[in-house]
Image (cartoon, rainbow, N blue to C red; front, side):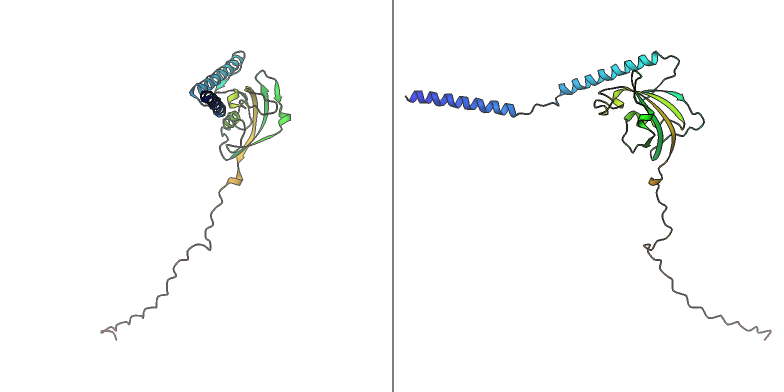
Length: 221
């Protein structure tokens, strides 16, 4: 009888132990930051970038009459209207006024200039598409430039949550109408004198010295 009880207790203990172990395993978080996972993610991104660049290069090759320029940021551009006289470009602290048209990589309009209306950009102080942030700073007044942006410097994986989808390359035509300094950021001129300045020490007036008596000339009294 004692042997039977011991066997039952041992069986119940084994079942309880196994259940606890399964419960702990189920609650253990799954690591998503392993080296293998990160490497696979990086490889996918490289393949995506290479695939989009191949499409853009085919577009460039199919238009030999257009002069395209490659940039260090990984996008391409060409000039529709070029300003060769006024060579100033927008810089941080300026306000840029421009028009914008956005197409997909096949040339279908996503947003027309009429859809978007006149655009205002506070240079390097406003959150807009990464490619446009860089591209506008390369432009001169009254120029129209068409940019070919891979998705990683456009709207990336998320798109714009409206008409631009996931990992979508874009063709953006920009006309920079004008740019001016942001006057609201100008440093005010310091006042020449304030009441908070430390008062200067006032010198006491010096008592006038008595006039020296003129010695009489012994020859001419």
